[in-house]
Length: 168
Image 1 (cartoon, rainbow, N blue to C red):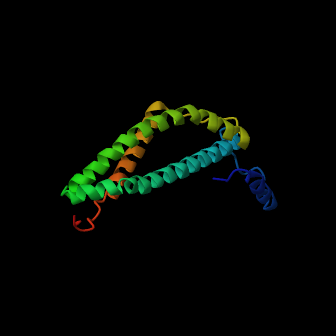
Image 2 (cartoon, rainbow, N blue to C red; image 1 turned 30 degrees about the horizontal axis):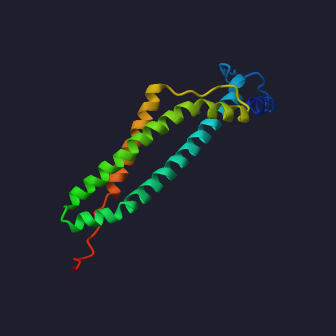
Image 3 (cartoon, one colour; image 1 turned 60 degrees about the horizontal axis):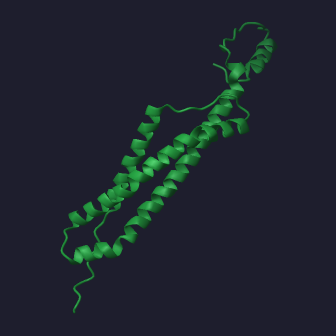
């Protein structure tokens, strides 16, 4: 198996050894679409890396900021005697109320923008193939992302320690 573009080197080497036309090459048209496949692969990697970086940034910001904004309420709940499991459940259910609409809106925006972005990246890379994603695959990816974020929200849902009793 030869790497793309090395057949000329092999022919030269065989000719130098006195074995011209000893090898037969079967590329099944690969050499004709090699540049398009390289562009396709480059666009796929770039789109995946950009999307993953954006997603991780948003998720980390959410997981850091959301529990912090709930801090005073959670402390009050702890002071009122709500068990830690009830506080975690409150954080988890509150996060679902934000994550679910965000996932739906983000999924709709991604579905609308995916083809435009990949067409732009493909044209910029000099390829002619287009990337598309099927609806079931898109839904599966969105569901997996939602589960990961919900698992993260549950892991970050820590009941704050009460600061002690207030004297009043």
